[in-house]
Image (cartoon, rainbow, N blue to C red; front, side, top):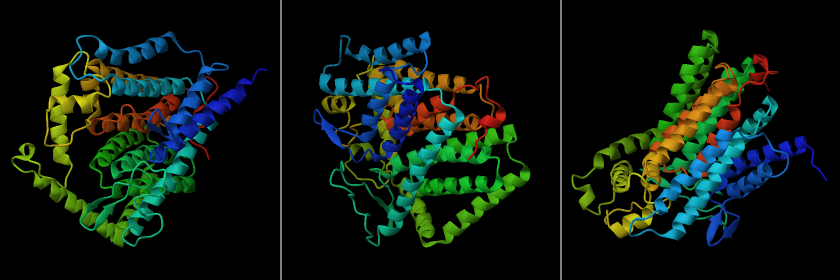
Amino acid sequence: MSVEPRAVDRVRVGLFTATGLAVPFYAFPPVHLLGKAVDLATLIGAAFLAAIAFGTPARRPPRAAFFLVGAGLAIPLLAILPPRHGWFAFRPFLFSYGHWAFVLLFFFGASLLELPESGRRFVVRANLLLASAVAAFGIYQLIGLPRKWPGTGERLLAMQREGFRFMSLGNYMRPTSIFLEPAWLGGYLVWTLALALSIAATHPRGRARLAWLGSALLLGTTAALTVSFGAYADAAALFAVFVVVVVRSKLWSRREAARAAAVVCLAVFLLALSPPGRSFGAALKHRFQNLGERPSALWDTNQSLHESFWPRVRNVELTLAVFLSRPLTGIGVGEFPSYLEKAQIDPNEHFDFPVCGWLALAAEMGILGPLYLAGLLLLVWGRARGNPMETFSGIAVPALLAIALTQQLHMSSFIDLWWWYPVSLAAVLARPIASGDTLADLRYRS
């Protein structure tokens, strides 16, 4: 019994959307396999890959895609060629390699989807709806933590991987929402903020545009409340792209831009006067003050710092040293913790994982690792250049790619759907204009 191609396409779109909706629930894995907790996004993503692999092809893959997939799967295998480093462990390598293969195939599977504008709007709306709920819970958490409101403890469910890592800055407790720590919440909200701003910029109706700006304000405010410098860097990349595209495309008139800026400024002013806003201001000042706590002999002591910036600097230095030890093949994916432990590179500090993704790729896969990943981002960018700047995709795709590039500077998330899903979404949105599409079709419509 054959299945209608359109029905298969709807299943694929549904599974792709559901994967994005499951990404924030990493802390609540429903199953355990081979001693490892498996999150919901991975399970749904595997179902998506099965839907891509079986049935009527979503689109005939170009020959270059097979070459790129093969190259991506082959590069990490260079690390197992002799001579390997003396502390090579196959179990963590195989687990991490399997995870790398999964996220890579998920990305290429998503790039085969050719959604009409209605389908792309469905995916975007669904992700923004959930992101708004996640942001709202983060604000609830921020206000409710000192008051011990229901649902603001370290655990929401018994199945949770671990307690939420609430980090205090004076009397201010940084929110995590349903993520394990504030930085992950901030990074997630920034890429969803890119979607909301792209909709607001291209929406043809004034009141609806202001409503989408309200959604963007909620996401942006909660991201700011995380007091995550990484999230701030991601947001800076987003706003740089947004301003350039909006100015060059002349999407907004001066009156519209002034009205939107006035609404945002008024909202920020009122929030700054509120009790949570004043508490946030004190926390931000406190964190900048912590930057001055760097001791002169930090790397020779066991001193505990309140600020994570300086340990991150040391982490980058160590990761660079690991890369230089095997620059061509790398030490192997998943090998970083055991390598540092056995080599006793830094016995006084806990650097069991790298914090800079681009350097981590180089350390674990050799120089070809970061070059390959950067090449994939460039391919998505090249595919998106067929969309005019004044379209939703014309803004969203470069914004998502800029955020992805920036996130790998401060987070080692290159084997994680938390990072790969927005990159895969960018590949979906980058679909060139079809012959039957008009500019009006590609403008965002309610």
